[in-house]
Length: 115
Image (cartoon, rainbow, N blue to C red; front, side):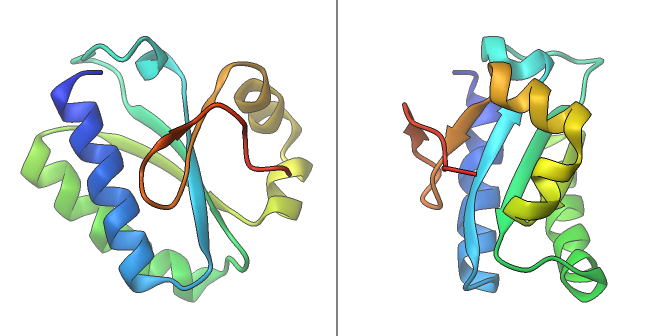
């Protein structure tokens, strides 16, 4: 795995774990699945929480901005509950087909979070 991608996943997982008791993990999907750096591509991530609303998103975006600035990357983050994730069929199907799940500690799991 590229050093930057590894840092992004570790920093996101650590920050979300500290800030949100209901953080369940994240899925990596898109161009970065090959675990290489891609200068012209965003790192696409779905983060799973028990609850997701405007106030949570307002707390998430500064975390994303700080990581993007520190690591000089662009992160395209989709925060969801399991229920809302399933309803967004386009992203859900893509992620379930080829995405990789990382538990709340930022450790890659062979088995996905059961949606």
